Image (tube, rainbow, N blue to C red):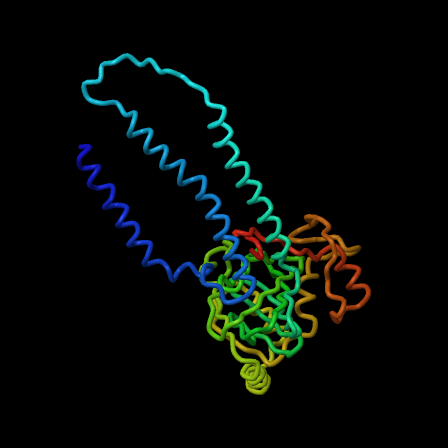
Length: 333
């Protein structure tokens, strides 16, 4: 039996290596196309290497000890261990993990600060604002500066920071474009902020990364990055050829359904703010789904929004910049 195990073990390892090599294209987070995704990939590599410094020697020593001191056939000697203590060895194998953990803490703190989702990306170009609303089971994107909106489709210019402002009409979801950056939650009654940037022209996969019911797996969208001229031409084309998104049309979108890509030449004024504020009652208290009270959060609403003073007071406490898991669920899970 042991002979078969010795033969099968390396074969299984080789088989796993072959199978994993065929999954390379699925690890989109390791093929970043923007500064945020690139920094997150660096963090993944650094933490993995530091962890392997501990894990690999431990696994090797474990295998050696098991093999070296295994019970052998015909061994009838009594078990009489001779215990020894080495202060030098104790210092070595405790100091190395402690030093590595300290390095991990410093590296993680540094990247966590740099990858704060609401932190603007340094660029000579002004950011473009896109408002994101997660619906059942689709994504609505509104471009307030361009006056257009889309469903399940994003188009952005290369090399330009994108300020995503995100909320949810109903259930909490998670907005994720793996090659551009980590995911961030969309929550009803809250306006989240996320900065991303694509540095290469191409098509990128986007999806919802949080379970929201029957068709949550179909909450995917395409992100197309083009040159700035092509982006402006696309905006103009949508304005001149697409129908308008009316209030009735928006209410239809809020009904649970799976939708294909759609474009609209306009949308109801203040739509995003109305979605955020829809569960806020008198005095700024939340009446989300029958009266549950929402916790107050620090205000981080943009002052250039077209809102009245009363609306701004109501919004106070409802804007939350969500720090993701830098799992890497951070701007980084």
